[in-house]
Image (cartoon, rainbow, N blue to C red):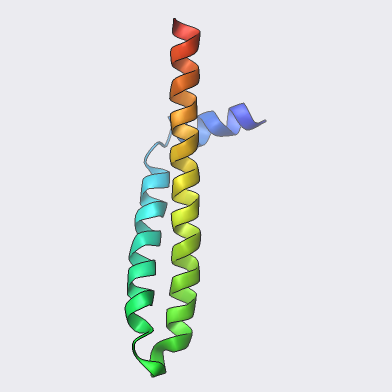
Length: 77
């Protein structure tokens, strides 16, 4: 199942993990700035958590892409 899912998400849509990672980076940054204002602490917390999750998912996507590229190179040579 993983090879099929990997092919679907990584080969057919290789930019998805970049978009998720970019969202994560932006949310993390905005959440960090919101922590400076006491009235925005709850929003800051959620942006911080969602941003961290987005960065994690984006990094995992990059790891899978690199692994898939290495595997293809090994099978081709």
